[in-house]
Every structure is written in C-alpha cells, then in structure tokens.
Length: 536
Image (tube, rainbow, N blue to C red; front, side, top):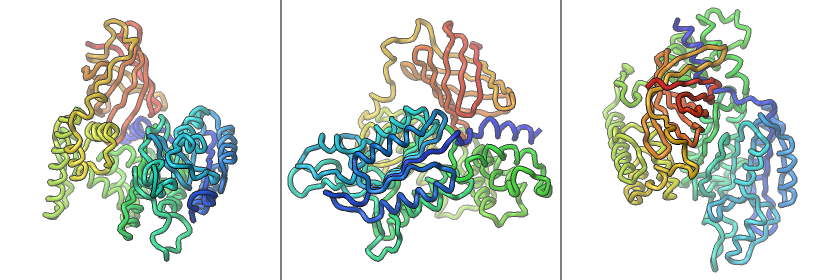
C-alpha cells in the first residue's frame, strides 16, 4: 500500500519534466564596444555557455561582439527555429542599462549619447522584455533567460544628466512560463573579476554557473539557490556585495543536464523494493540520484525517510547526506498548524537562539506587512507562501532594495517599517473586471472534486472556498490520499486561475466554471484534469 501511494505521489506531485521537442538557445557576448567602455570577459562567458549547452543537447545560436543589426538578425534566426512546445534559452553577457523601469541590452555599436537622450538609447538597444515577448510569441513551452549584464552604467556622466541607474539592472516582471536570472540583484554591480590578479577567464557569475549546467539531476531552482550563495561568498572575499536575482514564473521543473531523467525514472523508487535488486534494473545502472530527486520534489517527511531507509548502505554519498539535511530541515520547520517534530539531534544554544530570533523578526515583519495592507496572514513567525507573497507585493509596490531571501532579517523588517504606510493597499484587493461576473456566479462554498492523473489514477477530495476580495477566494482542500493544501483562486467572469500550496510543492492551474456556477473543470501543472461540483 505504501509503495502504491508513493507511485501515485510521484505521478501526481512530481512536476512535469522540462523536456520539449527541441531545446534551442541564443547566446550573445559583447566585449568590443566602439563608443563606451569595453569589457574583458563577456565574449569568453558566451563561448563557455555555448560549449557547455551544446553538450547538453541544445541547438545554440551564438553571436559575439554584435552590433544592433546583427543582434536583431540572430534573434530572428533564433525565434524562427522555435516551435510550440520547445524549450528556449537566452544568455546575454555585456553592457546593460535600466531606463524608466525597462532593462536594455546594448549592442557593440551603441553610441555614447548627449546628456539625457534616453529615447535614443531605447531605440538603439534591445529591450529585454521585448526579447522575451518575441520568444513567448513562438509558443515555446518554457524560457530560461540568464543575463550577466549588471555592470557599471556605461552612460554614467560626471557632468550633466546620466541615463539609467548608476549600476546594474532593475527588477522585472517575468512572463508566465519564464525563469530569468540576473548576475546581480537590482542596482548591484556584477564583477568581471575579483581583482587585477584574478586569472579566471570568466566573470565571477559565469565561472560559477558553467560547471552547474552539466551536473546531472540538478533542478534549476536548486542550482540557482546554490549558485547565488557561491557568487555572494566570492564577492565578499573582496568586500563586494553581489547576490544574483531571479524571477520565477515557470510551471514544472527544469534540468539542463539529463532532462529526461526525472521522467524516465519516476517509477524507480516505488517499483524497486530494495537496493539488493540493483542488477535487475533496466532504466539506469544507478537510480539513486533519480530517487533522491523524486523524494526531494515530493518534499514530504515520508518520502525523504523512505529514500534514507533504502540507501543506508551508501550513507557516505552526497545524495544521502543531502537527504538527511533536508529531512532534518523538514522536521525543524513544520508547516503552519502542524506540531513540531524532533530529529533526535540537540541544537546548540547559539543555533537555538538564532532560530528564535529569526522567528521573532519574521513575526514583526508579518505584523508590519499587515499594517501596510500587504496581507501576510497571522503573525506566527513562519515564512510561509502567504508571507512571501506579501513581502514580494511590498517590494514590487515600493521598489525597496530587499529581496525575498532577506525575509527573516532585520534588513527586510526595517525596510517595511520605514516604507510600510499602507503601501500594498492598492494591490491586494484589485477591483473586479469591468465586465463583471454573471449575476450570482461565485466560488464561495464547499466543492467535491475528482482529479484524473497519469495512468488514469483518480483521486477524490473536497475543498471549501471563502471570498477574500472582489474576485479573490481562498480555501483548504484535502483528498483521498490524506494530502492537504491551501488554495488561492481568482474568478474572472467564468475563468479560474488558482494556486495550490502543498507541503513541498506548488501546483498552478487554470479552469472554467459552468454557466450555472455549480461546476467547473480545470487542469494544472502536474498534468491532472479536474472536475468539481458544488456540494454546499
């Protein structure tokens, strides 16, 4: 029975693998600028990325030291190769500048303008949002964009009016299906080198990124989390602050290396009863890594414990040690409303004090966000999805120089306290569309649903929604497998857009309500189809 449940969880909760029909990439590196300061490592960065991804099955369009016409020509070549369902990758290294909230990638023939000629620069550069929109228009299933252009503003002047920010790029709103990584946070400078004696051929960011692109079984978000820390630590060795930023609107997981591993080995953990059966396995000579990725993606204590129990004889390997750490973190940080579990290990007084202080800071931050109208929920000291969304709304609304990774620090708390005078009021409860919903059409109440997933497995459950805004609803759902989730849904006319927050996984879905308001159908990022009917 336990194995059967685990099979189902792997199918229901494990996001769809990021393998598409084709994986097409555009890689640009610009060093040799004619009228603004030259760079030293952008072309080498682009070359390193191209060589690495060619070995991972990408078809790469590469251009080095390109003027505006050449950049546009290569972008067209790239987008013409993309078809619906493909995976698109974009990498740019070179000069970039933020103007009026938009980020622009600079070709090598960009001219140094007269003071304040902002429109000239916009017309002569490539807008990042425009590039991403061109990719999205091809129907590409997902887009991964990496921009190592957060260097000093080449248009900064000592006299007159400068164009763009002093350094770096600004925050963006990524289109759905897109994951964007910047080599530094908003307004930060990305280092080309640590010092004059630095022998590395690539920038601080790219030299850290390249080896991770070919690491088997490394999911994108895990890669970025580790990458950011390493870049920050390298920059700190020269007393510099550089912490890469990312913007995640991707549905499902993504792997640069071995993109089919998660898909082809999904059943390995459930169908192989013990490690001693290894000689009979046919999907892979060593499924341990795939089993670890599966257990980590499901994210429950039971899944991680099953992995640990299965591979006790290989406790000295990296995946096993990582699973133990994740299991320990899961037990130390229970979900809201769940009793805390103990791992058996005793915390040191310093660690206990630090944990207590962090929870106190999060509670104060939640209270401050609520006072600002950002709707962080109960001030319980738990950095859950609602609290993170509230902080992100605050950052977007105010432009404060903090990020989600600062949650739990006094830096984030002070930012909210300083700027938190009803800053989020206008973004929390958006008015309903002008067309409105048909009279009486609402989501409030109890619903019964049936989800049909992979292998025609069906799960039933119930959920109860309450209205929280003009067209916003929240609720809690439970299903026949004992899984529970918190749901947030928006109803526009008859169209539904929802997010379900399970422990360890987030599922996004879209649906449509029947004209009578008593049923709806939906499909989500896990590939399940749902039919729901009103129960009360």
